[in-house]
Image (cartoon, rainbow, N blue to C red; front, top):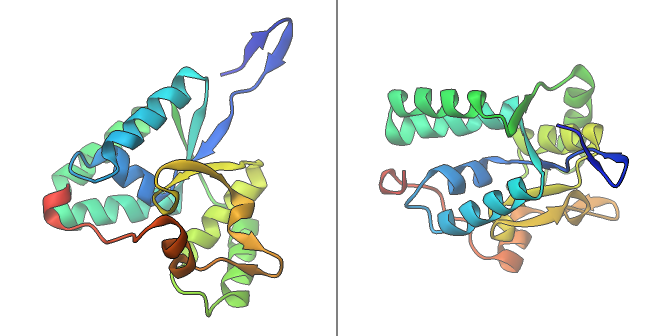
Length: 173
């Protein structure tokens, strides 16, 4: 949605949603759920729109199916696909190439998997600078925060900076 402010066209800010942000938003028992709800409501009111890469959507729905059952995952998929605030972005061949290069270059950094690498490639291609992330306790961060000089900050280092990111258990969904 494009809006006009003082006679000029302003595009909404795009915010990339990763799996952790989706979990925090949809899982009421998640420790970051309330903060996620506040963040997303505020961002929507400010005109932001959200992008979810297909790899992230697949990862999120697979996890939801394993944790809460297939019916819950199907319903979550319906809600996400019908949202007027969320766009599902298909990855391109170029995204896969870039993700492969990133994955190979930084293969010794724990926690940076192919979904993360594809997300970085999609964000770069779309010019997205913001993403709420479980690693930053649901606060916006710039993609460059992950990149330092010649390397990617591994999640273990991010955990030290932002707190531990524990996996979901069935009780959290």
